[in-house]
Length: 200
Image 1 (cartoon, rainbow, N blue to C red):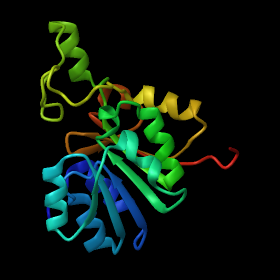
Image 2: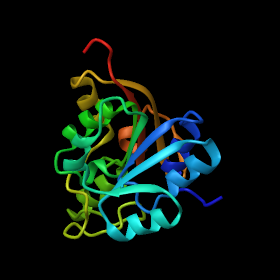
Image 3: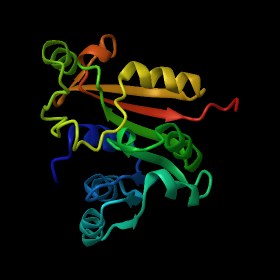
């Protein structure tokens, strides 16, 4: 068993066995391999980086090279039980469009992202006026792929505005879960399980 990143382990544990899954921005396929091997899922991936695509294919996974911002339009409605977007939301040019696409393609969507309102980020901005470089946010401001700095509260507000249902949410602090109460301040990472609202 490969040691999955904490947010991925959480997602893997909550995907129903035998589901059809689309992993958007699947990286080297670590999560897809776990879903296939441990949960008997039919996992497909979309990944922009050629090296990652090759690594995932070497694991015998079905991955297409493509960009979440443009290539999700090609997938048919409700073709997957789950669409997963882990740490890719903040790198998308139009995250709100990507979210809509996820919930069009999948019946449910898992979305995980680093919380830019975490206290360390706030402290770094407050004391030094600089974007922090931490274990979870290792790049400097100019070479980071994170072009949208989303916070837990921003995401909650956006989801409510779009009329999407939050089925569950988990908050990580380092590698451990933390409560949702002060998540905007304390969580370094958030994982949301979203579903379409049936009223739309």
